[in-house]
Image (cartoon, rainbow, N blue to C red; front, side, top):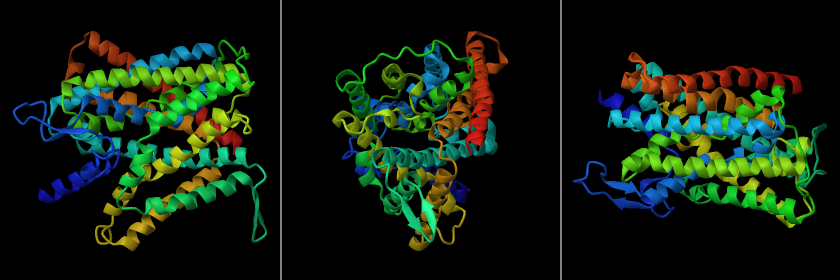
Length: 435
């Protein structure tokens, strides 16, 4: 029994994002205050409302903002309605996660919710979706770095052992070598200083791209298409990818001082991020129309200061976040080999092998937009929309009686399943067609 508890605690630690040691959290801005032990809503050291909002915004703010103009270009202006529908559905499923957490005080992580609802199989399913999503997002970081560096330095090429290596492939390998020491670190608190800047990075990118359109001669003259039915699955999949932070919500809820305010935290985070996603979509599509790239940063003229600021900000964030993304996968992999998991050379080998595998995938599937569309359709829609609804129905027993709540959850489930089926099918067709 004690061994099982130990394994479960190890998994819980590996699923905590961001991966910041407790003694470092206050220094990193995770403003924690001593809770009132007499208050059942607070215990031990807890995070304030403001800092929980910041952490939530950082979790939701990611590279997805670069793809929203491409999503609108795929589905047309009216597809923005689907962005708001996805946002509302993801917000509601976030509230359902909160309700699941309230049902059992022993729930600390997202897989705990799956186990409480469906036993060990539920924990396994949620863990698989989480780790696969982390792996593919980390791979997407390498693709993003290679694409943007190629845009800045298009003439860089290498000749090795008679093989010609293009600029994009060269930069993917170079970035991987830069990232390599970070995945060897046992203490990731140094990276957390930079990686916790996701909110600031998104704001800088949005303002820089707006500046490029308003004052650097690009303008906002593109009319665009009102609706493109063929591109709707791609658009919805990319919108779903923007709201893939649900696995972090249990961690945020657990760390919060006044847990009854978590609903307000979610509301602020979703409104703010949806506003930034929609703004970037409108600005980027108005600037470049149907010619917009899967990352809007690739359309920017590299000679302008505002464009370079947006591109450099785009480049720094993934490098700092890569190690934080893959560390939970490394920890779980190490647990498969308990005899070696505490040996430093073995840990370095596992981390290096994982990085090399993502490099191989990034070189084999150099399609950022299509890969993120696949992640959004299959993984994000499942982990952020479908699974919270199913777990809540099972834990609460609400499914036994038909009511307004069941109808709403049923509608969200239908939406999630539709995104998974049509989005995944379209994404796979696009990836296979461009290989």
